[in-house]
Length: 614
Ligand SMILES: O=C(O)CCC(=O)C(=O)O
Ligand SMILES: [Fe+2]
Image (cartoon, rainbow, N blue to C red; front, side):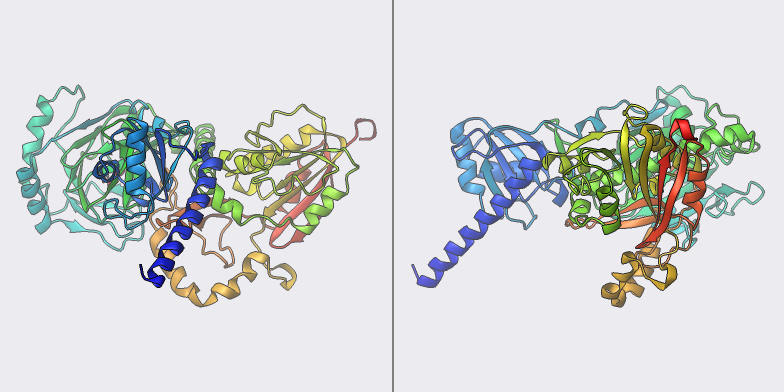
């Protein structure tokens, strides 16, 4: 062999070893799977997985080429690795030799690194697919034939009232028949029927509905909305306005499968809508759950073998058929009902609280769970004034970090007994790996005895709570666990990012990105028009990173580093001057010790008043 060739081979093997080691460290920390030097029947397939579009089919094909037999595939959502269980040790060795350090899996183009492992990870995420469907939801497969699909597409292609560029729509193209759905008011004007009624081609559908074994009361639709989605497009979670349309709502999926998310409060169910199927939303599913489609190119779906696989989306056209309601909604589901919401202030408060919980769940907790590792990488250096506060306690004091994230403050002062809590499992795992005392809870309900703690910090946490009551309740919870004389420090993001002409760290980083900003900013604004709605369609603005805040309640983008470059939106309530002090002032059991501004944050220190001197 040529010397150069030899050297190239050595280099390639070295690179593979390094990559393999790095991937093994990830699976060890992610799911406690340990590598084995000797062959086992378990193979870890590293560097490829659901997160970069691997399908079970392609993986099995690649393994089959080696002649080795596979008995099970284990793919985990959001991960760039997966596992194979092989029929025997010999099968496992065959697959290892054929696939390690080779890029032969489908069209992926990524090199797979293989390793024998001692065990499989405990399965996570599969359960999202095992949940029962919302009551009143039905998906009828093969509702139309391939030929009928083509006829329907032709019928709608020619006519219809298009509503493009109406702000709330992203790239998705929309057309209306019968009546126009007005995205500004989220309603229809029953006095203004369109010239074009629902195309006759759709009449094939109604007898099929009468014949199907569904027992709801329905009348022939008089309004049709056609949505055209290119791969990567979605529709934000919403409920079709109660007062605009009757029950049920029908949606026919053409040209591509897609996954639709249904949510009600903390409940979430993913529903596969196959090409040419009909979705029927009635009762609870129509009135009490939101539905939406995430803007993605690839869906994670159950595989033939009972695991998970990926499915690339194609262009999809959906036909949503509805019947106009004339008069107020009389449903039994007030939470998302626009008619009910104008009734009593009490009902309004209940639905506001429910919305707050749902917003925090979707745009805080779920996001931090997804971005935990990447987020944690960007959070290491403690802020000096927080560290200073921690240093002000006597040795052996017990200090609780509420919303401790990756635990960066827990090791700051080793003379303290520092404990931390957070809701994000992914972030807690980082702290746990460092051997820290952390536990999982919500900051509104901390499982710590009253008056038992010497100190408390909560850095960048309560600005993620969506109502003033909830922000106050979080501070009250900290006051409750403090012993008399105990002190707490709270940091929240300030709306004003450059007080006293001192730019915050957040704005300062702007220098580096200044050049790209304008175009990126424009692009983002375009991209997010559509993502940024509350379930009841109240729009929340998407903030442009590294700029001043325009409003107090905003969605702040976080872009992942993986191949999908997904943008997650985190909800923030940025604080006005004095707002944090005013909350503290509402608690009779504490007194304000100090308030200051630090690097774009409003900060307070308060002390629990000793019983005998209050
Ligand atoms: O694309 C779909 O199936 C749903 C469309 C939808 O929910 C709507 O237009 O209200
Ligand atoms: Fe809808």
